[in-house]
Image 1 (tube, rainbow, N blue to C red):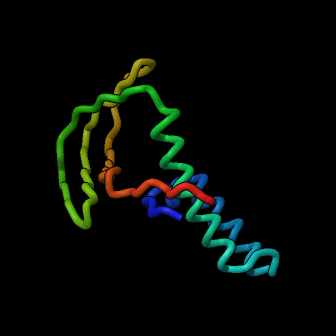
Image 2 (spheres, helix red, strand yellow):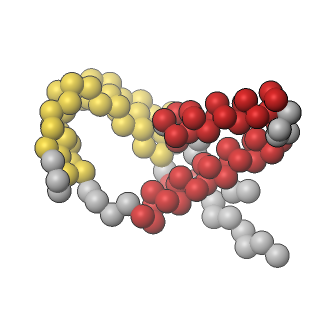
Length: 112
């Protein structure tokens, strides 16, 4: 399987998947190896879905509190952020943005 960022595992759906897989491994319904393969596929699928299916744009403006660049990942922490897209505009007290270089994720080679 190709490398993919694991950042979506901390989303609500990623946490639920991880908890369910842990329960299935603990009960013996899945092997740990299969659970890891499922998580790797989840990482790839989330990246692909966001790249291909999300077409809306969001704009934000706020005060940059901290930023960090480590292992090709940017992390920005903002405060008093005005967030808007085509449908809404909202003031947010805190916003954390994690940005990864998508060119580092290699495409999956064709299966034979």
